[in-house]
Image (cartoon, rainbow, N blue to C red):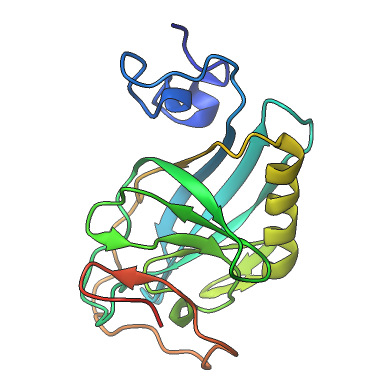
Length: 198
């Protein structure tokens, strides 16, 4: 048993390769793709949570660094709290283009994914990944997802761990309404514990 060689670079959990529990889970070959979502902060409007994303693999030197966006009022009716910090196993969903990454065992949610989308309303609890960001907006989302999927493909193991760091600030007071935005071109599949995606 050994600590993650990234140490604090992967967060405060030195055992993310074993889902934070090296006595139960092992990764003897060290071949996981690790996706870290960090620096999560509420936007000044209170409509979104922005952050950073890094994707690495022990099998390829290709990496990705970009930005994330979440709806600060997730769930089917906008009444849930955002995804809690934690370490989650994940898999690739091939039923969308570009492919999505689906997190498993997220408390209070089903089908939490990392996918493309530019506005808070594109996410009902999921994470958007992009190459650029501004308040309540994410740019280059298809490019980001293509790069992330390229790393997963180059890694070749199919083992993915997503480390979600906790939100660093509190929502700005006075804004309690769910975000509004132009409707997405097609529905985004994220769902709260109360029902299916849209």
